[in-house]
Length: 258
Ligand SMILES: [Zn+2]
Image (cartoon, rainbow, N blue to C red):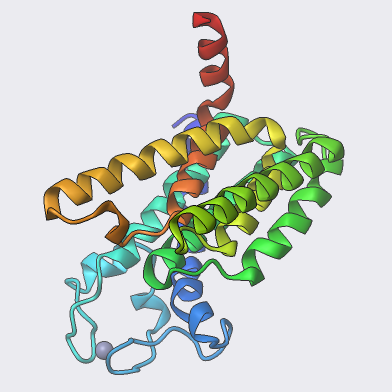
């Protein structure tokens, strides 16, 4: 096995473990519960989940998709979040190699996973992730391989400022809330980590994908697009990830066809 492949497998395994922790945060943060104690419990029967039943991805299948104690069906979302997190960690290593920026980018992508599922469940983006995320993103601009501090700071200001104006205009014109301030702070965090240069691709991809899914939903359900039940945070996260992995190529391609 090549060393490259071994590193990727390790990154996937580590990412899956972080995905397991992401599941804890997704479940507990919005409820205001401690994220450290008690240890993992079955949401149905509250039985402690022992370490050998708590192996990311694998335990779900070994246990036959049910809790060992009460036999309640375990949501497939748990292994899905673990696999997604593992895949993203491996992808970050594949794209950026081993350098200080890689660890920070893995943390950033992991935070986007947590935010995505909390927003899907509760339509909130917790400040305890996005606000420290902005500070950490700015702090990392002193590390090699990261956008300069000025690019990060401008990224926060333009990212948050732009979305705040959109939100303000939408409320004025439509007389109802479209996005929340959580989305504003999330785009600020994305700007902090990736610099202002990431904002065009992030905004374009998130608004396009959000519109497509929204229109698709409206057509399928025969309902107004305004009743679309999916929040905007996951689309912003998708846009940031598309920029992270393909942004340079996308911008070059776009400038090339002009
Ligand atoms: Zn149970």
